[in-house]
Image 1 (cartoon, one colour):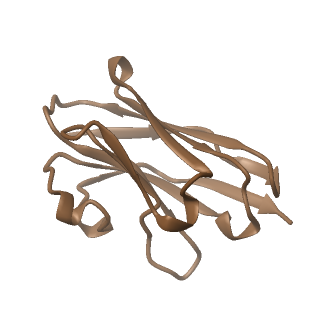
Image 2: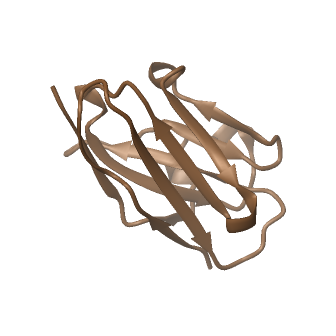
Amino acid sequence: QVQLVETGGGLVQAGGPLRLPCEAFGGIYNNYHMGWFPQAAGKEREFVSVFSKKNNRAYYEDSVQGRFTLSRDNGKNTVFLQMNNLKHEDTDVYYCAFNPRENLSTLRIPAKYDYWGQGTQVTVSS
């Protein structure tokens, strides 16, 4: 069983930065996917960025390439989503997710993730 604790989030002006940490507790996994999926009201969760432990690299949705950076603190089982140059359309509830079964073909699919955090609100004022 894995528990995910999210912090960060809040209100920021357009063009500003924000950092979202997510720490995983419980379980020991050699390979996994861990990352962030934002969700707008009335819509499904979408992929924005995920770290693959097997490949030791982060993957990004096209619209955030060059603005968002996902990094990992292995000693603390924590990933950090650094969001720069935020836009109004980045406003969402951001959910941290964990998948203990690595399959690159499903990395971007929310339904393949077993564990989720409680979500943290990111609001970008225009």
